[in-house]
Length: 253
View (spheres, rainbow, N blue to C red):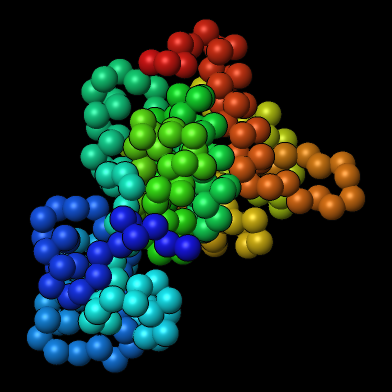
């Protein structure tokens, strides 16, 4: 069931929410909805990089029985950032940056668990795509045990472009892939690093794989050979911590 405090409905109300600077996670719009106001809404969502999904009216009616006018917006529970804003600040502050990129992770429980681990390990930011990604709503914050109140989330329209920016900014981009023959402990995580985790069913997308400097694998010895992405993320994240501590670094700076 959707928390009604997380939604805004009605075309004008949604436009006003967007234009006032409120963080909108996504907008659901009735299929074939037209008119001047609908066009104005689409212009506003495009300008503010907010994903829009065209859906049957029955889906909207399941969310609210009130007069939604064919439009419902889901509000984000956190402020979104961009990597090009976060990275220069990290370098200016003398931080050895550590960023986790989630490519296609859509389960809120996995996302919350990864965010919780990231915050505990001193990760500087999580990067997610606008589409094919989890909604960072109140459920995600709750699942993260509040970690998302402290951990910046960068939501990027083009994830490949964001990862390329990280590489060009001096990050070593390391992807976790079961297809790799390199043990994850053999990767070098001591410098600026971006760890990429893909969806459990499809893994890291091909356009992101091409941007990885190294692909590493976590060894598995059982019968199912299928680690949960949040567990795999925890292993990778704390390997970064282990290597940096062994290197004499202060992982909090």
